[in-house]
Length: 90
Image (tube, rainbow, N blue to C red):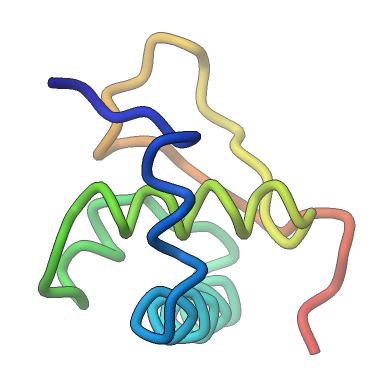
């Protein structure tokens, strides 16, 4: 099996999933404030749980415009680099 955002996205709209999105967003804000960019592996070091749900949370946050991927299409998933997006964090 491989990761598919559309399959995992439904898990974000549960109480546990919404908390994951909130926690992931806060971790991302901290990483961006301290370094200006982050890798997926940096988030994984702060997380325990379903790795596909974490990827879905990252993808959701990216879709909302808070972050943007700056890695090329052939980057390893764990080495994918994100920076601030067009929508500012509050």
